[in-house]
Length: 122
Image (cartoon, rainbow, N blue to C red):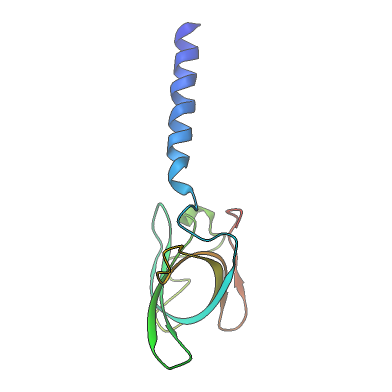
């Protein structure tokens, strides 16, 4: 019985530690921003997918952004080619507290207005 209890505690501890890297502490979750840009690369990889895109500001200057998302397993119907270079997207999410051009994406719409869904709780 003691071995079973110890095995359970080890498994529980490993689960808590594994989920630890999924925090949003680096992002300002009190404010949602909306950004429109053009995809340069899409990384459909674990542990989190990343969208690289360029955004033109009001002065015409281009800024290179990165948006982090959930894992591929949680992106319903997505594939590695769901986003391709040149695609125009509108994303909503939480910007990095540091002010960097980096965000946690909570919503992503393609240029035709179709929302690409995830079931990650975001």
